[in-house]
Length: 177
Image (cartoon, rainbow, N blue to C red; front, side, top):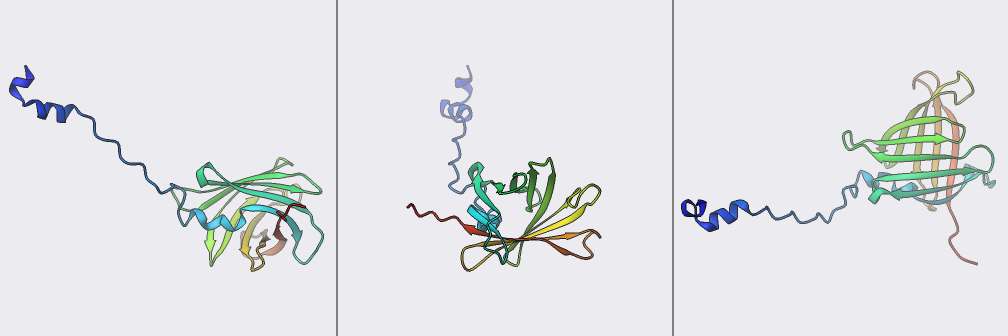
């Protein structure tokens, strides 16, 4: 009966589903903000700055279609650890959660400042029981392809800073023997 009142072409147009939107060719996490931590992605041998004595290896990889970065830190002495970093879609800031093999968890936040990734977080008991500190990590790409991770600690809520660690991440040799 409806076809008598409404032309069939109109009924078909009303009843037909909307065509699906073409999939976007741009990855949702392929933005400039998401590229801010690309300098750290890779497989690394880790040395204290100024030393030729390797102290760790570290594997940093992009996951989840480029939406997150996972680190697996493997020191030659002491517990290993994992970090997971991502850009918070609501704030546009980088967030990193570190979980160490010693049970420690630290949440960092930050972003790119003057071409360097800077993350800051409050680390409970970093200097021992009851010795908490605000930690600021600065990651800098170097001309030789290495990355410097410079850590500073503040026990006065950021009024003053002391060097906590200073590491150089050198790319692992990918040449096969």
